[in-house]
Length: 352
Ligand code: HEM
Image (cartoon, rainbow, N blue to C red; front, side, top):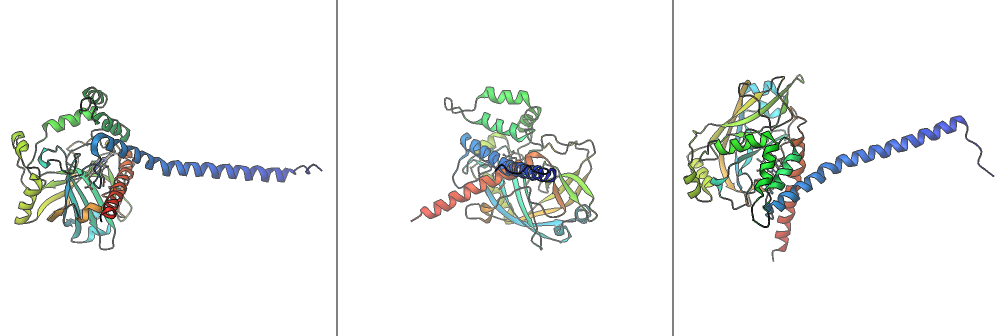
């Protein structure tokens, strides 16, 4: 016997049920695309970086060479006015970090690296953390993660020559003004002779959120207290491989080294979500506290080796901007961290 025809009410209920199922499936797919998208992009990034010659088992895929450092941060009252982060009401915040050089392998010559870096992890008494990973350049060379991936590909040595294809590099510079500006910075910026007299820039926009929920867009830099001394090209070429580590150890034997945390406040015209565009120097700044480093240890076996200095780890009172490069960094660093920890575990298990 054929089924009885549906009443209008039953037809409506069936249509509603099918629509609900379709909506749930679509929402599920969107969720999966969102979850898998960044992870897939991160794997692609790390695979490309490794193919460019930077696969050093057990080490970071970038900034592989560095030392662990520790000390404390002394916030100024101005900081607690801009951000309600609980740590900014403390007089001292314990700081752990890592000083490193950009690119290169774990054995890279320290003084020859154009880019130097400072990563930090500040931990509040209530356990909240603020992680930062900054470089000595004042803006990023590429306006998007996709453009940066293109650059990593272009820098991959051609098997025939053992060098990157100069035409590919030139093409990138022709296409991206920020790449040209970066090359100009790399050619002309002073080469200081110490990690301690180098400045480090956050370059991404973050929001500081005060007790009333007021959001201030800003970027930060750590400006060295140590006097700048520069190195000539000849001095750099003849410096021992561990020049910066030895120099820092000598300084720390005399006492702590410091940097002022300087906040640069945005004007309404400033581009918030593109770290390849530096804000004009005349923007107002706030001196927000002092970082002191008083100890260092080798990264091998040091506590910083196992830390992922993901710059999107922020306490309540700091909010990341929608800068897409910042989001990509988070996924890529996790991928790099996973791979190196897995390799370290395998190496330990393989030991007799
Ligand atoms: C799409 C852009 C970027 C990619 C794909 C990328 C990639 C990486 C990777 C793979 C690592 C190793 C992470 C680890 O194993 O823990 C790393 C480390 C680092 N990156 Fe980036 N990076 C990007 C942009 C930036 C920017 C804009 C800055 C600074 C302003 C920066 C600063 C650093 C620093 C300081 C480290 C070393 C952190 C540490 O000592 O653990 N990176 N980066």
